[in-house]
Structure formats: C-alpha cells, structure tokens
Length: 136
Length: 169
Image (cartoon, each protein chain N blue to C red):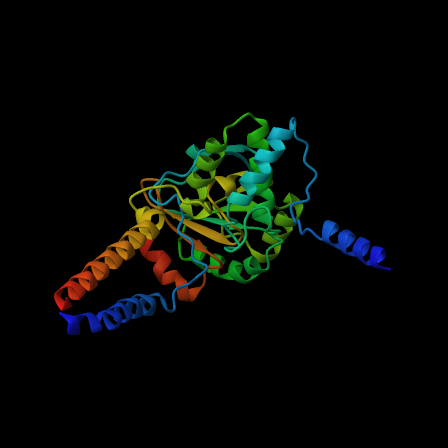
C-alpha cells in the first residue's frame, strides 16, 4: 500500500511541473536548449508583469519565446538577445536589472544598509564600553 | 541628542508614508516604451489595400498615429468608431493589422469604415515586436520629424484623447 502511495506521489510530482512553454522547438544542441531555458526564465513578460516568458501564455510571450529561440539558433550571444529585448521593451523586461546609475541603490542598497548596521553596532558597543569604564 | 533619536522612526515613517501616498492611484499596468524619442524602426510590409511592399519611407511626413489593431481583438471593436471619428477630424492614422488575416481585415473595414490612410500587414507580429507592442490595441504618436513621442496601451477614447492629442504635433 505504502509503495502505491509513494508511486502516486512520485507520479503526480513528476508530471505536475507546470510549463506553459510547451511549443515544439528544435534545438541544434543541448547547450542551446539550456541557454534558451535560462533566458526565457530571466526575461519578464511585458504583458503580464509578474510572470516570466517561460510561464506566460500570452500571445506576446509566445512570439518573444520564438524570437529568443531563433536568435539562439542564429548563434547570437545571450547578451545580444538581452540587448534586443531591452531595445524594444526597456529595462522592464529584465528580472536582473543591469547596473547603472538608476539601479545602483537596488544593487548596493542592501550592502549600504548592512554597513550602516555594523556602524551603529560598533557605535553602541563603544558607547557602552565607555560607560562601563566611567563607572569603574 | 538622545531625544532626537526617539524621533527617527517617526521621520522614517513620514518619508515612507509620503512616498507610498504619491504612488497611490498610479496605473500599475503602465509600462514606459523604450522607443520614445527614437525613429520608427525600418520595415518592409505589404499594404492591405494595394498589396504593394511599403517601407518606412512611405510613412506620412506630417504628425500621425500608428495604431495596432486586429479583428481578433475585442477592445479594437470598441475603439474603431472613435478612430473613424478622428479620421473625419483630419487625424492621420497608420494602421497595422496585427497578427490577422487579410480577408477578415478587409471584411472589418468594409463593414465599419476605414479610418486609416495606410494599413500595413504585420501577420507574424514582427513589426509589433520591433515597436515593443504588448498587445492590441496599442497606439504610437509620431511627430513631424518622424520620432515616436508617446505610446498608449489600450483603446483610444474621448477620455484619453485629449492627452494623446497634445503629443500630436
């Protein structure tokens, strides 16, 4: 019985991986297929803001997936595909924004905050030590 | 000094509060176009009316609108009568029949009237991608020097026309 349960669970989990991007696409190499997969997961669907190209079923996503596929098969580099999309849809389509003056806080803000935290921590420590020394 | 520190959370709250308040009511679906300030991308498309191949050189020389539409698009049905009205007022409209079939498009124009001075057939949606279109209807305003100055997603109507009109010069 337990074996059956395990089997059913395995079956359901294996085949329930949701994938909208199920167009039949031919790739000339396994590498190209991997590149395609990682690119469509990193590019955002311009129509449906909280989905990437891989997950979206909207018409424009189907077109853009086809475009990515074609560019990869045309031996374009990943950067060329990304530049192509940015030229048409703006930085908006990148889930990983490029580093620029506009995104500097986005990229380094957490580290700045971490630094501020350490600074405050050090200031408090030193203040406490001074207080203790004054008491002694 | 100590007392001032007590007010730090309040100050942070006020700054964040103002920031979030200013974001209220903004259209979350709005997406800036990457083509603002650029020329219309080059193309080679077949004209719906004459079957001739048209290029960017055939575009109007005065300010005009590029309107993406398709017979498959419900919002385009709603938009169409207003476009006809605009054409009657003398607005130059370039239509892009986006991912559509020629016979259906011809039928649509015969029934509803044709507001476009020229119609380009973008059957595969390649020109749409070049312009960063996300669907139909979508409209671009091109100024007299051939630059894209504004993009509007969704149907044009009497409410939003006044804003779009401002860019048409």
